[in-house]
Length: 72
Image (cartoon, rainbow, N blue to C red; front, side):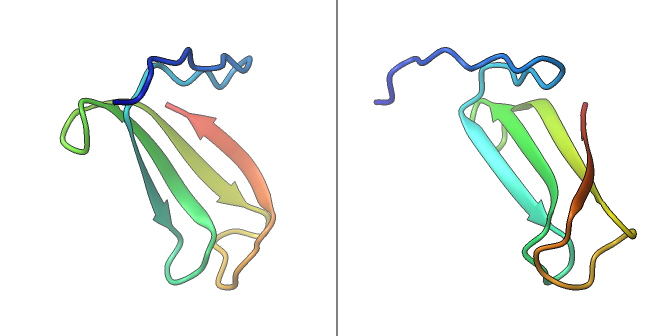
């Protein structure tokens, strides 16, 4: 059992309590497309999503420079 640990509040990017994180990538690169946080496991409720954009648009190669991160 994992201890109940308070989630750090970073101004503007507060991520609520969660117990599951899913990562998706841009095509076959190692660049993150989205990070989805859920409460209640993989089938639970989404509590936050981070969406990444990259300098120069959609990257076709690994290790692209992140332009923005948006939380919804």
